[in-house]
Amino acid sequence: MNLDALETFTKIAEVRSLSAAAKLHGLPKSSLSLKLKQLEADLGTALFLREGRGLELTDAGTELLKHAHQILAACESARSAIAEVRDDVAGTLRIGSTGEFGTAFNAQMLYAFRQHYPLVKLDLVFFSPDVLFTPDRLQSFDAIISWDETGDDGHAWQTLSMATFGLFASPDYIARSGLPLGPGDLADHRGVLYRHAVGPQSWRLQRGGEVVDLLPRSDFMSNDYWTVKYFAVAGEGIAYLPKFFAHIECERGHLVPLMSDWESDEKRIEIRLTRPKFVSRKTAAFVEFCKRYFSAGFRFQGPRYYVETVLGANGHREEPSQ
Image (tube, rainbow, N blue to C red):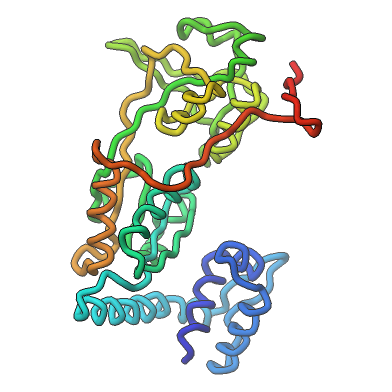
């Protein structure tokens, strides 16, 4: 059985679509299709059935998937073991992550890690928590990074850092709509909301012993914080964002922190080891690096992403419609 074809099968099975798997992993759709056909020919059976616009596993495909992750994990463990004999931090590190802050968080941290460990190849996949934490999915990764998702499930969680949320808006929005001084003023303002799977995220804020939980009127919601921040910079409303995530925009004057004495409780940034009884050298190096990354003295050297002011086609600032 060809291991490349087997890995292709697991990638397609993850998303139940050739097109989606090609897009997710940056591979040609034709290449995935060819390797799948080779695997089906080798096994003498179909592994997927087409259902509408997607694919469903056949009984044979379901049975193969049970073994595929174990086979691929065993192969990677062998590669890692050989690398450790050579005393190298090397091999492919597979990271799963909830995707709230992919560009400004995971990308930066993984880039910094690669500067220290250039022999490690990275495979980063974003999923929503309800998909990411299924038992068969966990076996696909060496480690999982998530936000405030700790569960009493027996897995080895470690807290990397803590973050707090606050409110932010653009100078243009404040000029048009006024500056809220406290929670009572927010009823007169629009929000740009983050959307959870079950609905919009409320703004839970506290000051001393006071706690408020607000859900403002909104014309825009998204399950991606980068998009929420973009619309806030464009002047579409107030956004509830982690303070680190809005730091550069505030430095450059594209966003302004509001009601700075009100903030959320602390949210955990965590890492889960999927195979805590066998931690490879590369995984251990990654965990230790993540801890250093969040330490007070760490200085990031690399590209950083931020949202600039929104410009129109003529190069002049576009004033959002009211």
